[in-house]
Length: 125
Image (cartoon, rainbow, N blue to C red; front, top):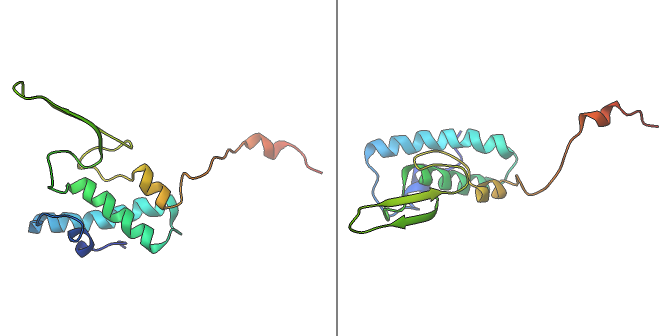
């Protein structure tokens, strides 16, 4: 079950989607719902909607520029025709992933903790 709609995606980008892209977006919205639930099924519906849109737009691109969505660093050259980009948060272009900001919106990754299975072996009392 998707947390955002195709209309939500269309309202956030400036280019017109082809029929094929609309189908892909709809499928990606279903897929990202699974990723969202893996991080925090109890997140607010607004957070789930924003994160869904962010992830799908990163995957399909906005069409606003030649800079990949999610790029944190980039470089260009002129006559040598060179171009390179660094994608942040462990993702890649055309890949469905949750960024660090998305995870924070979902309430994940905001705390530090640890678990030691040895603690269970220590008698209490």
